[in-house]
Length: 515
Image (cartoon, rainbow, N blue to C red; front, side):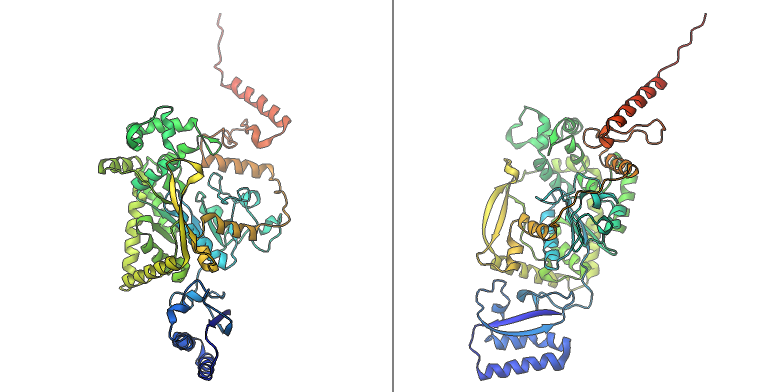
């Protein structure tokens, strides 16, 4: 049961007392559905006919006279005043509180992240966050395995730090992370909904080119006239390979993995398969079965409306103010767009498939789709007008040529307005602080077998990256050795050196001396 207060700015008179009695009788005699059906009329009368005023998220107009009533809500939480009626209607389905959101790069994914974070925040849900990254909680450069909760995660709510057996049944994931269904099912609640978002490949690559600063592969040479993307695509394989030698966020070579087909890479398909079209098509078919919803950036509102239906959420659950909205974009010619799509062929196949899937779902939604879409957009505009104050042009990480617009909530904003309009990191920080344990314990060390498996998964995620993660060489070979960083002991390093010498000796050609 949720508790909702209706507050008026008029003195109580006999007429209004009579209205209160009528209102109370509707609740007690008509029951839940009768109450919902008559509530707008009752409140409109009580508030002097100004029903729109009641729906405003900013409740500064409210004073002290309060009438309280208790209503049953579909998800059993306290409804905010602005979403009680038209935008927080009771539906016949049961809202889903479990969502695994695979946050892809440069797809408008931060805006969707803010929607999911807000939903979980108001319901006090447990999130998967990287405990070593209190800035954003991302797990993007870490492999996700069944051992990840012990190594990387904050504990869920009501679980003590170090109680690793109960680091499971998480409600939400909404960070950069590579998709691994087997591992994720191990620590998420059953029946979690899997969600992601993808973008038209030429637009996504142009944004990724700026974000990851692929032009660094030019070296000291600078391309005039803003033709960096065009120049890079004249020799894409060469320039991509140059990125193997360059650092990104302290790691050498990371950008190589994101310079081609990075959307399907985020969704779990390793680069070695990107040129094998049959393998790509099979993997896309698998994603189609495993994901409940793949949103399309170019049709973001339409996608959100389908997501609302899939999750059984309300309009206010999916309303948003854009985050990380870029100011400057490169103008791509049709010929250049075609080159980008050819270079990112696996991403192109991925996008074409799920774009078709979205429009099929829109058709299946029924004749009310356009009406519901307009209702959502009207609500979105209303929230923007009532919640958003100033905006500011900011640079990402202090980098030049990557400026974006960020909005700020109005002064004295309601909690709902604040969570909708504030900077992306503020809501994350509130969730983090609430979930972070007070008495932290160091992670329990893995067994040798677990460390071997963890290192194998790391290598599978970024094959060939000896400098980034510990690597296992030829695990089936009885003489195989592990990277010293995996074991760490001087004795093991000496043992590895002996085994390496033995392997080299075995590999030497035998010379026969006749005579």
